[in-house]
Image (cartoon, rainbow, N blue to C red; front, side, top):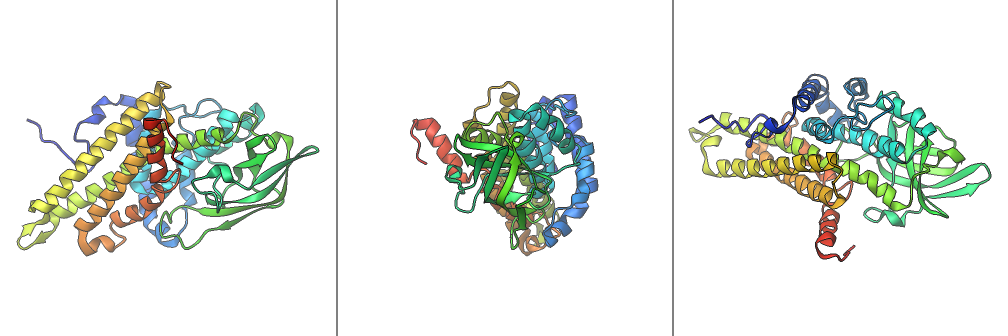
Length: 390
């Protein structure tokens, strides 16, 4: 009987055998790129609270920006391949996956889905090549889990629109060239494509974060920002359009969280096998083996869930509540795994030369943004009971 290898990339049920040759090649290429070009930078980036922009050309060259979108020079990957990309990026750091998620799922996707042909031609090729960086403005300081309460407004004026308000917790906000902004209009909530160099558009980097430090986060301010008529994303219809974008991002997060858990698990396994206490390795201790077994089971369950979500998405059958299940389950799993791995590492786990503590810190953000853990449980609860508890 063959030996079941559980690390460095735990695949206890041999799920890689279910992938196509192309999917395995994509995963391998991203893994190699991340290991060579991003991993050496991430420790310092996290320490200094900045996003390493020098990695953007390489990410774009691999076709990872808007990778599951078609046309306009975009790769058109299948959604399982896209998920594998997210997993490999977050295996390095959640901030790197966040950058790619925002660019693709929250900026390129709404332009691709709701935009005019002129908007698509202007922005999608540039965003896909990394020549432009985008951000997504939905969350406000008093909104959080209730985006419908937004105060940002776009008023119709002769020849266009006037935008006033603010947004908070915006990934890429202070490095973006273009922003997809959601605002209230007389006709309801609509989306707008807003160049960040527009007069009256200001950004402020958010500092003091203890999580997702290798990612740029900003507040956005709009003071009588005048926009032409064609800034409106014509296909947007109310808050449901904004939430459709979040569903795209949440799908990628469900995959990405698995990558973070895998990285922590691999580190803990190696440490336990090398660390000797009381004359025996940690790996020989019952308590440690129990922890590793539970972690491997939970990681494997999350891998299965992610793979099935990818199949459903490629079939056009994926429901937003199923995405919520994936996001909630996998983020909670990854956070629990990262904490357990840090515990196995002991005091060594507090040092930034190990990855588990950094992943644990990052996952506190990942389990909160794009819908908190509780919100996703309530989405599932509504689907189960037919009663909204929001």
